[in-house]
Image (tube, rainbow, N blue to C red; front, side, top):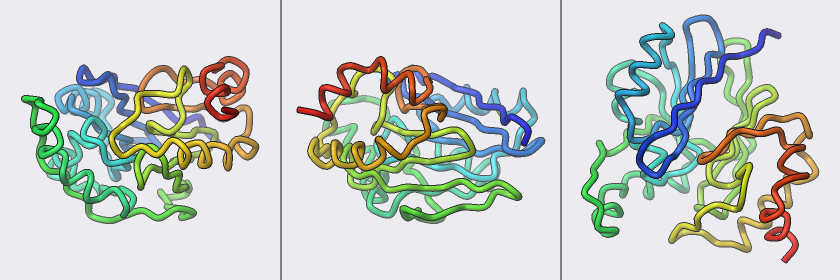
Length: 213
């Protein structure tokens, strides 16, 4: 199977990661489109890609900021776990409550995701797994040898807690998958750098400590 192209865009706001994955020549899906719509648009244009789908690992505003622009511009199918739909649509209210001046277009989601579901993209399968903890509807998104882990699993550290985060639930979700994820899987987190799962297991001491406290 041909290697798929993955482009990482680091959004200035909260340094969240957006990923553009070309799964077939000229076709792509977008993971967690953040605030930097011009960067995302430029990347799609330069690589001559049409995004057919948008998948959000969870509903926090730094991960859903450009969903609507992609839907309106390209007609992409946008999806989030049903448990985070309300959180995503409350993004501007939450930003205002936190004293932020930034605002986003209220994200449009054309469908909701469920854990344990496979989504067929032509001849390729993308798999969604529910991993509640950072938020109620947080998900892992598996595609070939890649795992887009959102704010559930980081290559370095544990990550910043959110108002919705339940540490015990997060820990349980991670432990459920800890012995299941193949070592060679490349983890693409919501913040920070990508690494193999093996590198994370051997090098992320803060996370290991968190899991065994």
